[in-house]
Image 1 (cartoon, rainbow, N blue to C red):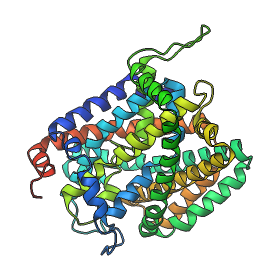
Image 2 (image 1 turned 60 degrees about the vertical axis):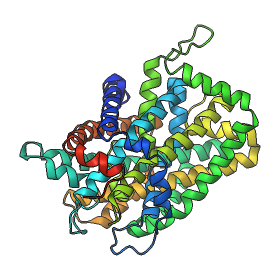
Image 3 (image 1 turned 135 degrees about the vertical axis):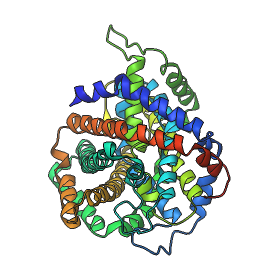
Length: 439
């Protein structure tokens, strides 16, 4: 599985992602960058209450739920793994993945709302399949089905990855058993997931802001305490994004392609841009299409350009990143500064990050399950809960490689149709996002 994922990402999919991201930015007149922050400010000021349908979310709550789906293991274990496998330059390519991905999330949300079905009980409501199915002729009608199937599998594997990373972090730090961690996490997930989207959004909108602020406060405290080391780390990130990183003692170093491959793949795992997940939350209301699309573009900004950057710089300034890996590397990097109390506090934050990601992705997978014609929703929810329980017992390398592979396959199927649809609507999307009226 590891070989397949490496073959897919290095270099074919990495370059395809960057090229399509650049084309989407050009076709939309760089609206995602030019309106940076505007959508975030207006959206979070919008009312989060009063939805008229069980699938509706207010814009503020939709944004926080979208963040919950992205702020998880990818922000700490994913970033640490990227740096361990690709060197300091991997953090630069994580940034690039977010800058390119902003336009992908924006366009996906815009198209989903542009062609939203009138029946909000429809399996197509607030999904990427809604716009894909509308424009796929008979010869390509399999594409929405394939994307839904792969996204369903990715939702299940997301549960495996999140619970696996939590279990290993807990075992490394406090010695808890995998069985106990799996049982407790599965129970917590069951309490929320069985309540549907409203319950998921309600829990996420409370947990996510608090945990993000706490995590950023801890990270910035470390970085600001030694500005010289922070500056040196930033210089390394820039330099080794384009130069091989050599290790001493005759050991093999890190190539530029390794930095690019692991930076992009782990970045996409974190912010999910290009996968078509944005409409599940940010198209799930009848609000302003332009505002929702711009709000979708802000998710990689918060998730990656802010949170992942803090993780990466803390790891580079505090951690033994050449020898340690994953969640253990992140926790050790923070505990090097804060000691025992900080270590336990951070572990709690990481557990909540993983928890909110699992419950949000469960809804994405559930919608795909419904689109594929299955209606035994409660049975599917219990299947996902079971994945959370068994996740700690899987080999770490296997589930990460499988996650990379599934991400890559979804990107292959989704990015080219997305680009084609944006080309068809470029005269409408750009002006609309830059201030024109919804049409």
